[in-house]
Image 1: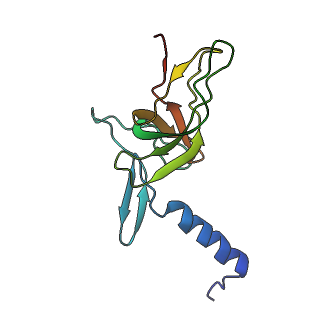
Image 2: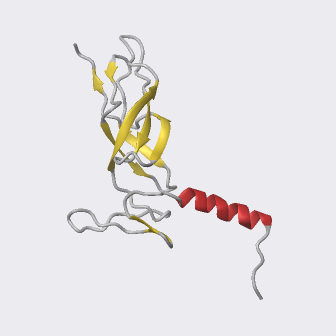
Image 3: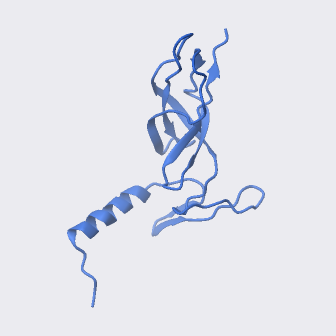
Length: 139
């Protein structure tokens, strides 16, 4: 007997399709007939660790565009935020993102906007910006 989809099934399938459409990153292969998410090998041929989501937990380079915040000053912490895209600029990985890398409590920073940063996908397939290539403004 065939399984009949109800409205909740259709909504769940559409959400899944929206989530994987255009997905790219380590261990991801898009093809006309489907998407493969699995193990990836690094440059040395080592198998990358793969979380429950099947996405490899490897850092990769990303493009940064400053989209908000400020540099900070002698009494205020830097609050720059970024739009993050793949290196080919084809896919936006996140907007209004702050790096996980700890910033100084106070002091002016130079924005990493227009530069390359680094990030990874966590075990829930959420992109995490680790480093935005920010530097203390010492001049």
